[in-house]
Length: 289
Image (tube, one colour):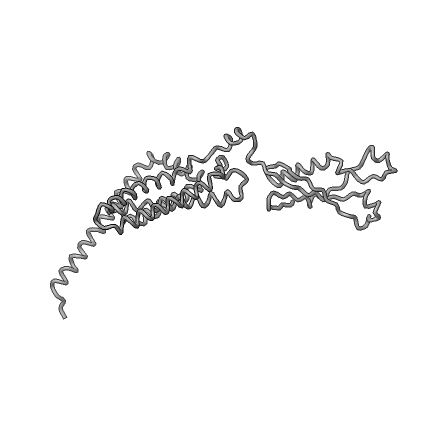
């Protein structure tokens, strides 16, 4: 059965239009690829610098990257003005993502949240960022809904202006945390304290040969433990080493001396440390050699 000539003609026209559109997209892709290859030596150093900044500020770079990917995926919506105005929701969502990370990280931080090895963020900003981010997200969502549902009247124009204002504010808010980051060296110079130092509690296990002999426990000696608190160190290993040295220099490491053995008291012997059972604890973390 022969098809309707009109239908066949429309079908042929669609195939022709699809071919032309595809050809144009391929041509545009080739032009962009060639332009990138030509300009790469010029823009290469700038791209490397941008990549270094993104790597060094990863907690903020990832939300920004998420927003950029979302925009690229929804490029078809940018053919209309409402698509551009709707970007405020994505900018605000990126800001919310960073604010939540700051709040969660600040819960386990003493005073400063580590961004990288050289930059920190005062945990006091975390609650401010969370409240601001969620408030901005609510404002953007409300403006978007009311702008789309309002009819062709002055109120629609008013909500579109408000949505445009939210777009500008959300874009600034997404990047503003970067300016809250502080250099570790500057914070240490201002506070006079090292941010890398933590307070450890160290338990030192040892055996006192004289005490065990006094108890008659030479075959099955008693193992004792000394607790040293507030050991400032950068790591558990360093805390154990500092506590070990401090313990050996103190009288706590002297062997048991009976009252009648005054001669031994003048030149006391040291106890035997159980180095494999020296434990350092900071917060809820416990580490042992």
